Amino acid sequence: MRSSSVRSGNINLRLATIYPLSVAIAAFEAACLEWPTNEVTLRDRARIVRKRELPPRNNGASPS
Image (tube, rainbow, N blue to C red):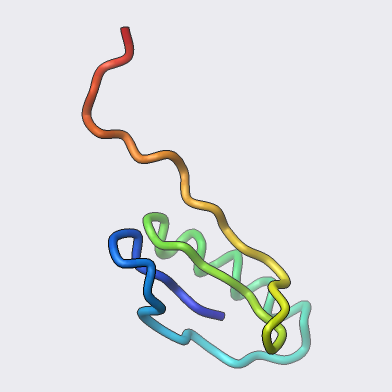
């Protein structure tokens, strides 16, 4: 499981290597809650198992 920075897009942290997959998915969901502004990806080697897409950035502009 990896966490990527919103600003740079680089991998900031390799969070864990977890087996079995059901436990890895639970850890992925917890990581999404813990780091809401970072992209979090659950991988099995190079294959993406789950990826949390970031919400659209709000630039402070008020909707009209």
